[in-house]
Image (cartoon, rainbow, N blue to C red; front, side):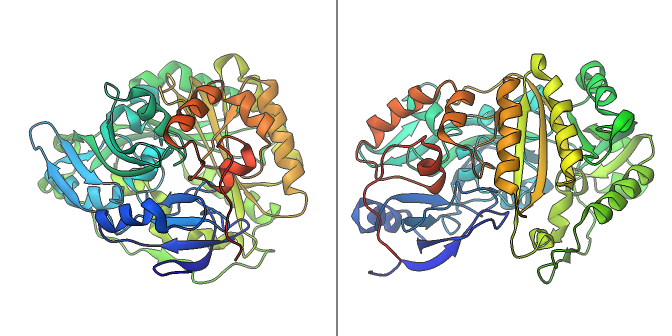
Length: 461
């Protein structure tokens, strides 16, 4: 095999079942296009910082293009907040450059270590989805390399079908080269947060329904091991952007600056026995007890939006076997499914202490975008015997209640399951037939779930 490819194992952030891939890391757009136009062995896939949890950025025996060196900022309009950048630019880099100047990404997921290309490919959502929608709501256009049509500039007004297939399309329509997106003006680097305890899942959903409109950002931590009348007990953390006048004297003097803090790190893989029902239950009890109700607590954006980013390599806590993250979204009429899923998790004693509940607003226009109006529950589940059958049970609960799982985090779902959850899948495949009729693009997710086209032959490793 010719350079610049090298063979190495890749997995999602959950480190579940690494697979051998041929990886290259171009530094310039012309070098990337040269690779894409013929030098790449097997099916091709772009990859960012690897924070997707499942196999969406894994391409067994195929080519994986690491986009992280293609991270140049091309232009910025300080009047409108429009930013043009290469797709390998991370949200972390955008925040570092523009937040001190009073600008912030309009939508951020739970980590800042995500590339712009990855955020578009999975149409990421944040704590403000109920108000602002997902990441694509603030993307004006993208430059996209496609196998059949070359480089396209597409937007909601130009080649709109390709644009909306690319948004949430898991990298299967082409390689995103660059994007234009709108940042949001901010007065400070802080939010004013209200913390509230809810005794069970019904109280949490009631709080979302009756008070979410009062908050720009809204999220809840859920105890998935609680049972009976405490099933789904939660701590709600809702917030609004903080004005400088709301801050105490120190931060008020430099409202756009955040405090320096030491980042901890997990230096090695935890032994499997560390995360067990007893340790997780103890953590949940402590967390619930410590987070007492409070109003108007000022919190910097790092602590509120990205709490886990302060612990480097935190995925090592799940040991060498890794874990999966399962995100289930139920429509309003299927909210009873949340209770069924929580009961199943509590009974199985599998869910970890990282369980998150949010309320979604209207779904986006992406053909395979995940969010839809309703409630979304995210679970971290350690890889242990019986994992796959257990995930199949969760899939059936979702299907029975009209819900869907998130492709960026899926690990084992069958093609029929995905097809039932994503009604625009045929429309998406029609775009693939136009931009990639020979199946030159591919991923483990695409082949396993059946959402992509048949791929050309791969090279064994």
